[in-house]
Image (tube, rainbow, N blue to C red; front, side, top):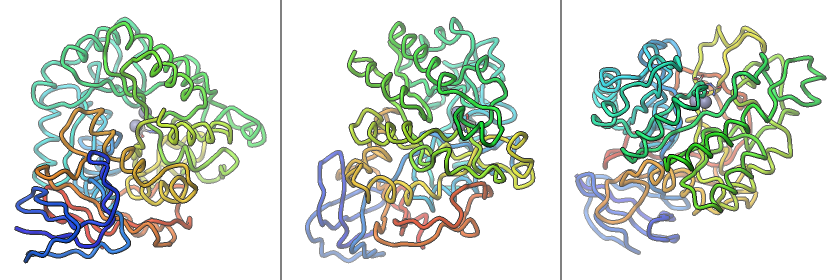
Length: 424
Ligand SMILES: NC(=O)N[C@@H](CC(=O)O)C(=O)O
Ligand SMILES: [Zn+2]
Ligand SMILES: [Zn+2]
């Protein structure tokens, strides 16, 4: 099987290439990247005026299977990933049952393999049942291909237990993906603690809820030598703390989600609980700090925290609706519109944050268009303008505050392992 991608703007952080090249894929492998390739192929894609980047890698996805199939299944989640340009996704463990054992990890692996070419990596929970009492079988899960551990949905409250988990992760050389939230400080908050919250008369979540756990986790990572990756950073001090950790030479990386660099609490519509997510939308100052953090490469990764929920439960109002919004199918246009078009990120940095750096965090041989590597590729038209429309989503989750929003940047095709898995 030969696939030839012609005339695209190849952007590949691994080689530093940014220019017009053709890409030849043979039997799932990138065979050649050259100025012009004249070769018969089974399939030819014209990528004129488009970015050709390594397939995107999302370090933070909730697939909801097993247990919450009404929100999303592995199959629908993978279809959403493909249509969003993602070829590898890390699934978070807050399923039912929790992904805290070899059995559940294997179940997800087998299902994913049978229904999609998207590379699904299931993160293992840190404690059994995510109850925070007893460590899960981390070594066992790692032995069958679990790429990382995470307690996402919550933090491990007991620092001693968490430190033990970090020691195992360090020994096994896998990263810890840290959801940073001090549950004792949350105080039933649902939106950011600021003037807007007072105006709306809703309970608030302060920046401290996130920042104190980020600080704790960085200190624990320093003591254990573990690779720490901070999930969905949303505050200005998170950027400061990551900067300090990096200056100390610690193995600390951090992600920012598109909703946190696009919206502020001023955009919040209190009647629409699709503006409710954890961490919450923050202030202008926080958003500007996150954007500068990405620009200055303090913040390494853009991840989606794709968190599908059912329509009914999301209608329960700001106080009662579950936290979370979908993100797989809006990440590319929001990144281009908010960060690339505005000059915060170069297209090369976009490829770094959405593919090359996430691959490095996981330590996997992906996120590159180098010859000889697996052909995971995304083709994006950065100039196409349109309105986001949830009716077009492959995800079961339609819970997004971005429905109807004008954006620029459209995924044209996604190729995983040499196969076209999405083409519009
Ligand atoms: N982000 C969210 O608002 N919700 C996530 C949990 C999480 O990522 O912490 C979910 O599982 O729904
Ligand atoms: Zn989380
Ligand atoms: Zn999450």
